Length: 414
Image (cartoon, rainbow, N blue to C red; front, side):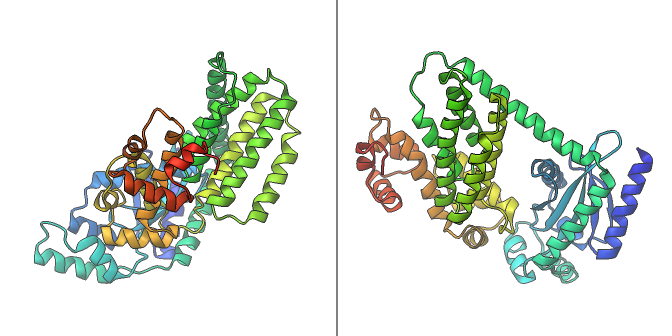
């Protein structure tokens, strides 16, 4: 272990020397084990008084996400600097994280205005010292960040050896096994229902349309549980029902993800070909989980999102709090940004105003509630975060083309 650790540290040091970027190694708790290269960014953080515990928590989460996303991961620290991280598997199967950063990618004036100006308890002398330190920090382009991320990933993969691939495959298999267990558990409890849970399918498409992967997987498990039970294990019938579900998923990806329809059609055709080659319920369940992940990724595509970590935090916060009054300041604190900068950033990355996005989420959540006729329109409006029924109706009509009452009358068939 010590020999491998020393070899890893030497490789990380070589990376830092060759690129001029600070390179670090973090343990599974996000605590820095080793750092190479000068780090004026870290000195600036100390001047500002950014708590070390915040950094540790951020790096710990990033280490987990390198595994969740299967490799390299670009993220922001609490002070707005960029890091790129990749997992390294040690000889005793411990996971450590190799990281390049902190890196500055926005203009220094913009950075000062967004992260430094207005901070409490900073003396004029400290502000001057921060400005001086900021002048020594190099500004990197996004192309450079991408290139350095790739280099670090290749280095981390080389350090891990082929066991890194085994690790990632093992993680994937464990996840699929867990999904299968959840589905079987649900199926065993499905002794009373005889009607297809259409409302669950609608809810699945809604959470998928806002990139909510966790709830999308939960709902898929429930739907598959019903299909497997209700068909009596007849795999041909199961495949037919699952194929129908794929059509719905692909349509949602095309409508909400901005994905080329021709591309979606080609992908769906390939999925349709594959389904008839599967033999067991377990194979179908694991395969559908992969399809759901693929389509959800298309809907909430991250390939063009530069500030992925921030956007994910903001979207997760909105999904968890849409039923409450949400202020821009609350969301900005979640993403470690100022309110004004967050508005610009969100519009730039997501191609939609933040307020419009929140309203869209609320409308999607209201659709399922409107199908419950025991709830008044006002009740539904309040449950999804609107304070006035008239405003809810106006927003709902703008998004869907019909009023909430008409949507209810049509039982959601619009």
